[in-house]
Image (cartoon, rainbow, N blue to C red; front, side, top):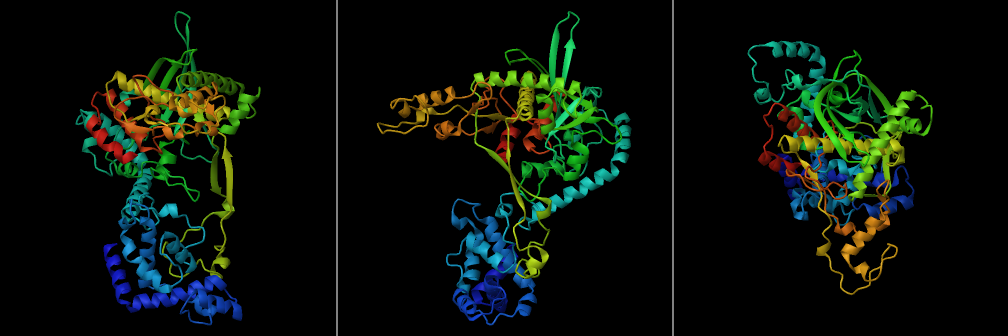
Length: 597
């Protein structure tokens, strides 16, 4: 990258043939992008004014035969890097390509001020980028592979993909090797195995096998969107009758266990730590863990051969008042997995028959909904809330799937008429749908995931281990003084004096929270938005204001280890407590947390 930078900078400063030849091509391409095949006098005059020094007339065949040489590609790549580094620092000077890109674009006398918008428009005008390019994918701070922005990320992704394919090919042999390894007298201390493995080595056996509970007869429901392939979690309901006749209703949250196969120093783990989370732009999903591994190995879904699925199970008994009476955490095996969609579960809850689902499924979902609602209302009583700002999902229909193309093409392939012949001259078909997070199934699943996080922190407290806790301090009302100015407010029945009092405003907003759903109108939430502290990660348990958690245990996320690194981190830590050899010290976690924000 440095060599390319120095090379192009030298061409531009000295006006070498590499840069002057590029300008000649660029002027023709820009002009053609403006007027296409129009050769009337008016069009030619307009393009002469817009693209100085452009050679006229424009010949379509000449345009179609233009190719980008290696030096042209170097120049285009420099402009792409300028766009990628844009905004990565707090000052414009922090973009190293600011030195060279104006030297490339200003002599064209087309774009005025040379900023990221001008650079983007230039790449579109010369046919190197489509009109619909998503600039967010080119941010140097976002570790996305395949964009030719960060070679290290590209290489890491390729290595992970190669390793995942190898694992899928060899896993039958690996299973046999694991059985042999587990029986070997040479292996005495399983807790040390991860430290002796290299980045390409998978766990040779299950390090918590003796702690796994066989829950293979328990019916597990996974509830997701129809298109979801990598499934993080499933839920179960169990009524247990004690010898004295008392009944406990247990809710079980079964979470995928990728740590059965990968240790904390594994190549997948290193990549996941760098990416932090799966990314979901409209074009495609960028998985935190390799796609095939996530779907075929780690996901909570029934195996084709009927085999056992490793999981971590977080269980709780919820009292009538919504508080947690009892809890359990243990590694498990599950097998009886039934996949459902949110729509199916909503229909089942709303009907007597359950449509495609059996009557026992309907009864189970209604029990789970009731339990989740009790827990939710208890959190609301202790301050939980969320505002009703609509959420939307933006996607691309199959007919508008984006084509794969080289990031620096050899020809101006996005320029008309070449683009029109290839179907690349228009925006892809875009569909936007509103996501209703308050359907019975969505609310139930969301609440049970919070229950699982609270079970994890109780287990951590009981075993004196540190997790990456998620905390949020209550609003800092004392930091705000409004003086005597009159402040308009959307809140009903708020006096002028109270409208200047931060504590009174917060109290008034909390009075507007729906006691059953926790919803508050966005217009009311806006009254306290400026007071709200951010949710952060901490090595110490603490309150989480908007989730309504204010106890000694705190809160942690543990239910999405396939798509969130912090959940993976918690899984390693929780499992290590079972064999009483903690994986991460408090100091280590404190050093990791800033990298995960």
